[in-house]
Image (tube, rainbow over all chains, first blue to last red; front, top):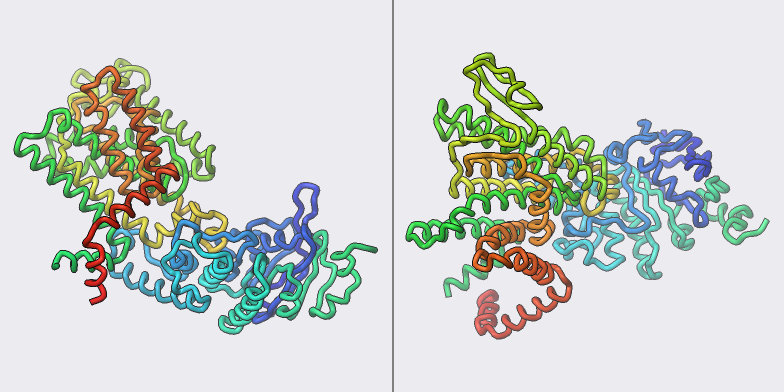
Length: 253
Length: 366
């Protein structure tokens, strides 16, 4: 059985059908792309997958668990993590604390352990620090661990967001325009990082991206959305030569 | 030379640890200075009368900072929790201070004040914490006023048949001849045997510091701060928002309740009017002026602004005018970007002038 199964997913805001009849199947270890022109409903689909929006039709199954319309907290605990189109970090906290927050549901101790500084507090905090530093090292952020997240340059903020998402120990990682605002060099580097993450953590990655070199270079399977409808599906090559896709991007009949 | 080594080692310690130690240090030094001044008879009466209120407001400011500064929600009803704590704790104290040993009754009064305020914090938190921003502020304001108004109209008596409660007047309590009125509406609770002291106040301040500073710097505290910084991101990584909002809100209410007990037991009468909107705003001013999320700032702002009106008695006619001007000046000095830049420049200048600086760096390397 596939890791993520999306069947006939749709959502309407009042009279506006933002997404309809979306089908996707993602296996563990897959790199999957979701593309389409602006306003096609890509981020809306992400928001349904992560529980930010409740779908009005269809269902989502993750690893055999029905996660349709569940809370973001529930979905996160069952193994979906995401990054955001406009970076959402905890600006007032350190880089290290941002990742430790990702570990929140992995390593637990109670409020009382924290207030009274019990041995359990010390053990768990040390474990969290160790784990978080390991993740930061992968993204080459370990030297900045004690800086404020907001003080990082743009490219590193994007990386930190991915590190924080990975800290939640996901089975599926959703990246919303990870290469946005990056120069070609940074994009190349990011491509390597994304592949590395997939291999190292053995997870599936679903990404939205406008940079076609990035998508074609990295994704094994692509779904194209336009006006909330799936208009094409297949490998990079198949999608690129699909007349419907060309029309959606360039206009025309 | 030895001093420098201590200083160099001090710099190497964890930043959070240093901050905490300094905060405890400030409170303990202030305590010692006051004790020495009062032992040598150098403490003015006007100041010694303010010691317990200062401790009360420091606890109030730190606890409100947990909600406003760390959780990032504006609460305008903090005095409501203070009055709930004050009334429940004092009621227990009045009933039991003669039968139980005084220290036991006192500790129990503080615990009851805290627990009652905490329970109401939970009950009020359920509807309030669903709201955000301005709406949350307005609703907490309303709850603060409701608590004040209800307590102001509450009559409670005790006779051989037990407790009698009324919202009308003492007559409608319908008590036996041996009955005693405990809470007398707007007159409140009278004939309280005073029990608060500066020492108790300082102990409560230290307890508050311990709880809030350790909470903020732990797994739960991180979660609370993450909600402030980005609620949507916090949700996406599986932080249970409601749980941590509630945790901050209740902890804050419990501490405010205890502050209320401390305050009430410093006087012989307790009236609900004291805990109105103005008190909530006053505490909020301490928090904002001291800096959101800055515990040391809360301590200093609460202390200075509580003493200030007393110190200004010499210019009696212009007291509130001077108070207001100082408040504005302090706000500009601590919060305006230009003033902050100017302060940074001044600090650099002073550092450059100090000759010991270069030597210390050598010592660190060696």
